Image (cartoon, rainbow over all chains, first blue to last red; front, side, top):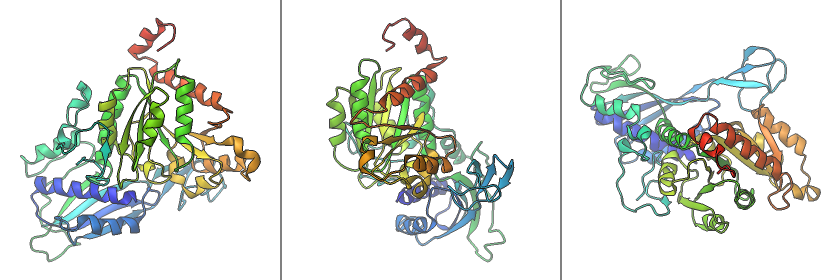
Length: 113
Length: 313
């Protein structure tokens, strides 16, 4: 359940930004979560609610924007799509794949007041 | 109460010898060397931004201020406004990890982050390694467990210095905890620092601690499909140690298949088969340790000093 840690980290960022950007309440948080990121979105949503209770983000909405994985197949010398780690290249069956995107965990933007 | 960066169980964690009830300001995290005494760039940007409310850019992670009223996808909200912040969720941890790494590299300390599920034999492998190489290398250990100092005690019984971090409810070590532990432990220049992470095949994979390499330990009693079930850990690893190989005659475990699975998620992964109990295969691990330490010291001032001492310490 490192999703709890991730949410504590998100909350800390929200609190820091509240000072910098002078807002009192967070209404919505948009996260960009890659398909290959080491995180479970449903666990993240659950943890977020627990962690933000009684804070400036109490009752706020968490919007998770999924980002598709992008990988490079060494054999095909081409960009290929997989849904999860340990999957082969859909064209040639090789596992010689390099993840080029879709493993990020980022806070994109906030709706605040 | 101990502070954590990533919020892993605020107030739950403990580091041996670390003063309780202290306040720690993440803006002044300092490991006592010049390189890390300046605050991380992002923190500086945020602090600076409190004095400039209109429009600010921070390098790297962008911070945009003063975006003004709500944009199209949040209509009709009088007081609400959109703020674009674009920050990695693990950004804070990564800053502490970078500070740890800077200090450790400067000191010529080879740091290895050991990852595995509980019971894979990490501590046995460590105690054996510490025993076998004690006349050759200076080694220290940071032990991570939710509770107890049992493992640190086992390490100290070999004569090596060790410090225990108890994470409480936390399921992994984070770079901030490790930074404090390094402060306490003060590993010798040119030494090897092992960080034994909390036994867990999932969470520790995501948290950079500032190590040079992640070493995954998988025992053959765990099942050969672990790399497929927990791909993040095996993808993050630089080296895989297949432990308890002495039990092979008693188990149905296909080593080749396991290695194949691991390389599906990490094609370049190097694998050693060994047993911390029988000693089989340990020489490969020791050779890797010596070679990796030597390679990391290339160009470091310590290398010239060591060339003058016969035992290379």
